[in-house]
Image (cartoon, rainbow, N blue to C red; front, side, top):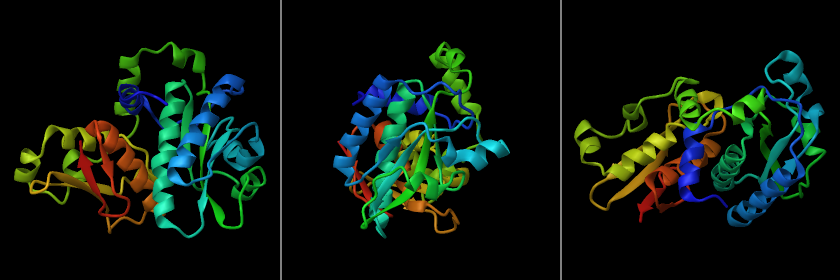
Length: 260
């Protein structure tokens, strides 16, 4: 598993990739990814699986130009009708995304740009489980050029590749005075969460800091019409935790973060 500083680097360069080269994922990289999935599945009580060389899952998206050469995915599988499991899937699925980023691969969380039924044919799904979402994975288009791009250039690409809400919007439940009083680890956590992917890029998660007990909390914006809020909550919590440096989250909307 990647070291903490490597994960911060991954957050700083990760972007959502829609265009891929046709080159297959090599066996060693696939093995490393599968090992990561085995580890996070154990931690999260999930059944995420690496599915390779199945372009039929993305036929419509590839033909429409919404995606290019998409053929591989991480199938995000977990218990049925369990919002907490969906949150854990976001948290641990994004952990796999960051590992893939460090291996020079591109990724994209998908909920609609794929054939879910076709994907399910290639998964191991028990009667008590369901296929939540998919994560497209593969070599980014022109990946040899990508792998020779400097870290600083990749950071700048991440910073400018999409619009993002402001720090103030991500801490909408706080006053300016409360923001000023919050510790550096809180701001670092929020800034890492600002770089997290979310459904339709709606960024429906906000954070607050409580001075009295030195905790942070993550909230789903009740005004958001995002269809996968618990998945986005898990993803944002992971980014926050990595940015903050050390600590643990309680699951759930409003769950607290204890910094260490």
